[in-house]
Length: 203
Image (cartoon, rainbow, N blue to C red):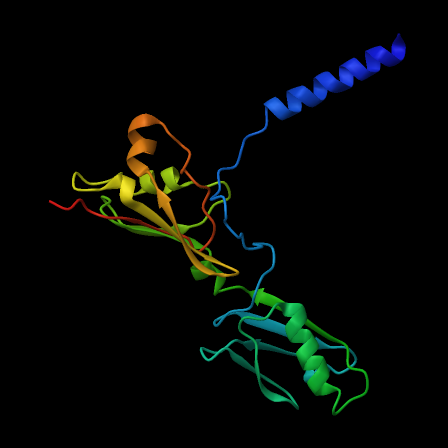
């Protein structure tokens, strides 16, 4: 009897947890990017530390060409790499001059992320805008920030442009259905870098 009661309570708690969960709306074939993996960009500031070699430890900016200058090595490409990957490349190059170098790369100022982690909406909206991405932000949230669509908007022809690991993909959005019918099937959660375009109607 006691075992049956414990099982009943466990099932009830699981049911409550599942009923309170919120479904995330995403394009069915979307290939999401891992937002937790930071890649170095132009304008970032990097702290490069070489253990027991303070003369080789520097703080450097990533130049517009995506490169940095490192003592002994000279110029080396940094943009597009993860900090650990860049540390590995510097380690390989330094091993030509010193034995078993231990290299650490830390992003001290992620200036490029301010641009990369934005979402944008253009076209037939009252105030086309570019804003910083927030976790959980949806297409509707972004459109409301602009003050809504104009009287000439063709909302159901709206498109979401997203950069994925397999290239840029385009997803149709039924914006009129979202705004007028409450149909949120295409009210996708946004990701950093997303662009939403709202075209005008053809008269």
